[in-house]
Amino acid sequence: MARTPRQGPFLALLASVLLTGTGCVISYLPPPALMPMADEAGDVHLAASAGFSGFHVAGSYALTDHLSAHVGAQGWQGDPDRYQHLMAGVRYFGGKAPLGEAPDAPLSPLRWSVGLTGGGGYSVDESSGSVGQSGYDIRYAGPFLRTALEADAAFESDYFGFGVQARMVYFRFWHDASSEHPGQVGWMWLAEPALVIRPGIPEFKFDLQAGLSLPIAYQPPLGLPLPLTFSVGFVVDL
Image (cartoon, one colour):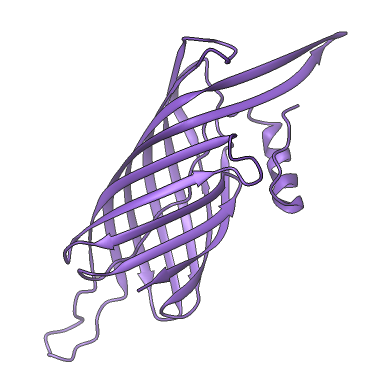
């Protein structure tokens, strides 16, 4: 049975249940969906959350009326050496079209964007178990690279936001000298749909996310992710 990471009793309990169905060692923790819902040049979007995949902070800045840049960082609460992930990318966004031809026509609450995110970091996980009277330990550790192609659609009003994101991810993991398989390389392609709900006020909203992380092709040795993702946090729009 894998060790249960320290991240609060409720999330730890749910994570431990999910771990029983995904194997003992995890090499990849899917970050939450970044969904700035930008409107125009100069928009700033800040996000922070915690969940099954640790903690995550991110920021986005709209360079033009249709192009934004973003950065993010992810780690494991209570154990920063467990997982470290830095990422950056760009998005092309649209929406906020006038609902009519009149100069004072209201703007559509619909938003959409497509983006590309790349990054990397270091992952380490250990587990132990037994076969008959014999015990064993497993350790996967090493650097990784991750790239993701993202597309999302959303509705946002002053007091509520709702969105869906589809993400295709490529993850590549190099086992280092301390790993169970030193020098070997594992990789996987994953489909990651996510649902985002944001109640709040125009400048501040809570951010609730749930989704899936589904390997569609992979090459071991590699620890597969939890199949379900969940996070709770907040976003600030300036």
